[in-house]
Amino acid sequence: MGHCWSTVCVCCNNCHRGNEESVHQENYRKEFASRNVHLLTTMEKWNEKLSEASRDGKIAIVNFSALWCAPCKTTAQAFCELADKYSSVIFLTVDVDELAELSTSWEIKATPTFFFLKDGRQVDKLVGGNMAELQRKTAAIVNLESRSRN
Image (cartoon, rainbow, N blue to C red):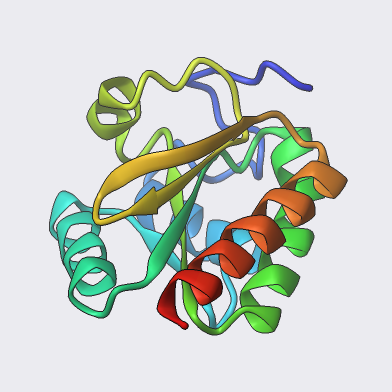
């Protein structure tokens, strides 16, 4: 498990000079988002996606990560693959630098940290970049949810 936490972005040479926000978001989307993984950069989007998950009775899996974090980059592809496999789940990625207050409120101490949420409440958590455990926990929560619907 990597304990990545820093305010310095090492994703490129431009992030913290001039055009930082758009360059950082573009790089983050390339690394951590897919068509089924939603990158959240505002509290409004956070609230919108959690409301959507609750309204639709879906599990939300939230990946708190950072572009500069090597373990986060390693798990990002697996997270996107899980999102493609489990369309009944909402997959969200939160950039800990973009939403620092949110990350602090969820007591993020290391990246990546994954939260499994039902109705906005934590039902499971995984700290670190253990891809096998991420896959196991995701499958378990999806199976549990599908059994409770039947």
